[in-house]
Structure formats: structure tokens, C-alpha cells
Length: 303
Image (cartoon, rainbow, N blue to C red; front, top):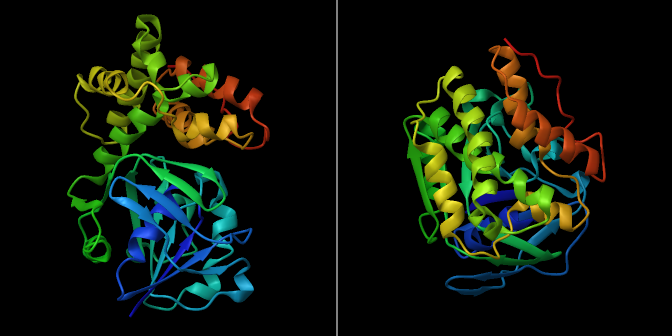
């Protein structure tokens, strides 16, 4: 029996927990701040209603083989409070979060060779506590090392495409290119269809272009065609699709401002790369965030 604790029961945490629980060889527990009566996930393959244990305080938690952190990036400190009772000398921790700083958020808390940073592409929306709509089966990418390969085996009985990549840095910055453009949706309170406006599409390309330049400076191998590819993907998607940043704003929750846009500004400043569009997006999102301490926009330093 493989013991798995999933920290966070939002769109990603709930979806992943529900699929993993389909395997009778897994014992899956949700770690949440507020207990949920049940978990119900509408998936492309039908309804999942797993019977899961739920821990609502770290005091209830026990040792597990795997910890999957599926909180928002800005909640990493709170997620870390769960780790002491969950970890054994052999426990591995998968970090299913946005951004490009997965390891840095848990540095000093977990041995680095036991960390599995993960890039998640599972379109899902949390409609209410414990109620999730998964729009597409999706995928997860992890680094091609021993811990990453062990993570892949956890999902062998699920339809989620989980695989390793030899270049995690590039894969993470590719995902960030998609996420940074989503700031437009959160700022305008409009779903994916707004990308079909030519002026909006041009703005999205500008945000992504800055991400590409900084990502290359950080060692990512990003093609010059990436901005157009990402915008084409937005325009081809459902007009009513709601990314997680827009969903958070609509629900009055803090947004992942730093992990999606602020990080481009911060790392751009390190390389003396100007990122005015992402700086503006981060500043405006911070100004309208219900918690202005989350995702503060850093000062831009140009070359």
C-alpha cells in the first residue's frame, strides 16, 4: 500500500487525489484547512466520488510515502506546516505548483533529491468546496531523475499523461509563458475568448515575449515562435474557459501574481532585462487583489 497525502483540495489537488484514489493500492488522504464533506470531480471520463480520509490540522497527520503539494504558490509557507508529521527519511514530495521556483519554495525543509517539481496542465475548475469540473484529462511533467520516475509510476492506473522530461527548466518556462498571458483575463474579468481580439492578442504576445527573453537568460531553450503558439492556443480554446487566476479574482481569493508575472520581473531585473508589461500586470493585479501582501510586484530595474 502506497500512502499518499495531497496538501490542498483545490482544482488540481482534488482532481489528482480523486484519480489516484481509483487505484486500490493507494491510500490517499487530503490535507486541508477546512474539512470538506466529500469530493466530487466531474471528469471527461465520468464522475469520480472517491472515499478519502481528510486531515484538517497537521496534528491529525501521520507518516506517508508521498506528499503532493497542490496549494497555490503563495501558500507554500502554510503547506510547509504539514510536512513534519508527514515526512519520513524516505518520503518524497512532489510540488504541483505554478511558476519556475518549485524547489526554492521548499528549500531547507526537504532534502533536494527527494523533491519532484511538477508542471501541471490539467484544465480544471473548483466550483465549490469539494466540487471540481475537470475539462480535459491533461498532463504532468517532471524531471527525468529517480524521484521523477517514481512519481510517474503513481499515475499508471490513471488517464492523466504523466511523463519525465530531460529539460525541466525549458518545460517550466514554457508553462510560464502560458500562465503569464493569463493576467489579461484576470485584469479584464473576461474568459479565454478575449484573446480573439487582435489588440488583446498583441498584448499577450508582448507579455510572453518578455517571459521568453528572461527564460532564455535562465537557461531555458525557448523558440521565437513560442509567443504565437501560446496565443494561438488561447484563441483555439473554449471561449468560456476560465484560467485559475481569473477564477481566483472572481471568487475574491488572492491571485498567484508573483508566481505568474512577478517572477518574470524579479528574474529579469537580475539579468538587467526590462519587463515593463509584466511589471504593469503585476502592479495592477496587486492593486486589485483582496490581499495586497500576496504577490507584491517587485521594482523593475532596466539595463
